[in-house]
Length: 171
Image 1: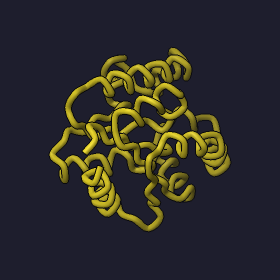
Image 2: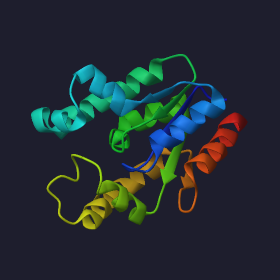
Image 3: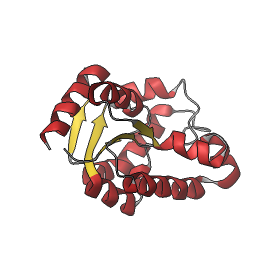
């Protein structure tokens, strides 16, 4: 079994919820990169975007991925949707564990996105268009970063966690 289980995917794809289920199954701690960034920065992600901009946030995100990768214990890691934007982060995740891409249908992402304060969605009236733009820009990076992908279309978080847990145990 590899030391880290990295969950990647679009915002609202279920990484944190599947991560919580995996923690229950494995007994390994869950680390959420967004939570770690908020704690270190002392401000919310929307505040970081508003105050420092997206490039500064992405730097913090890459630093957090590297910090987590250096930890020696087994961990379940829920990454932010953009963690795969940095080539170094994609490499370090792949080198230090199993990288699982959670792939829900775009329609479910759009439905969830309407209820959340996401900096990349602010100022966009048509969430379907915006999610599709982000998806098109990132899907090849998710493919590059992932060892495996799990379709979340009709799959519960619990089912996904069990499937991922079996795959992780086999490594």
